[in-house]
Length: 318
Ligand SMILES: [Zn+2]
Image 1 (spheres, rainbow, N blue to C red):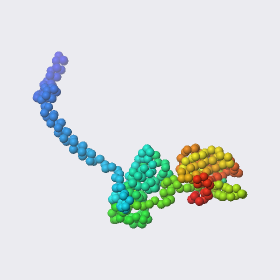
Image 2: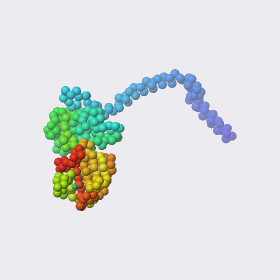
Image 3: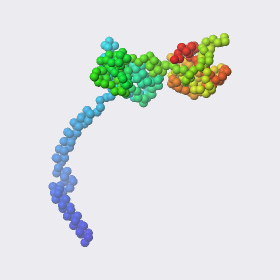
Image 4: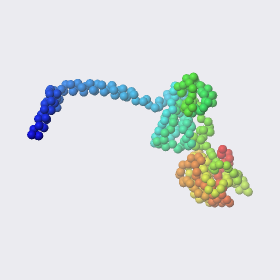
């Protein structure tokens, strides 16, 4: 009885269903009967989807960087409207020169705008800023105005406005980054960014206890800096360690090659913090003051050599 009731209900339901879809007995019947509307639907979907795809493509952001037209050497480089500051990810094998070529700028500009510290130390995956014109980036400080900036960098105010897509009436926002087309970095900034700047091999106040040159009938190849045992010794310029070990009268000696015929020597160290082959940045700790080798008390003996010949470090140190 119970079963019968259920099957009756089921039959009733199925009759209702077959009434609703009276034209189609089952799915295969449906496909057989309505292939024409299905085909039509497919055509409509296809026709509508194609322009949507085109629209989606045109919504893609434009490439971040549009290279400026090549310079032929004769025409003065006119700053394009709205010069851009873009970012570039350093690729395997890229040098600063390669990147400068790619963006038609110069290595000094790239090194300076990125405050590189040492332009030999850029690695794949690093992100660096590039500008699409030769020039510098100026971050607006309180009180800055276009007229003064143009004068300070010795560029035409019209060029400055054009490069940044600004109107003369527009006010500057503190922190805003402006492209200063045609501005050249200072020599000091270039030297620092290239890794060619010098600093003293000890931080803080310096006491020279012995100068370069003859003393007591012997030639002193460097300067002696008095400092307590264990005082950190820093690289006076970026370079590569070519020696880190015992060397007779020098005691524990570190030699750094700076790549342009110049080397520096740091002697009598109590301890060394770098090893041969290592690249070091300017002002990076390389060891500690000691009194090893021919020494009468803790001090740093420091030399600068040019093509192997000792020169007076005071001619190079700031
Ligand atoms: Zn000395």
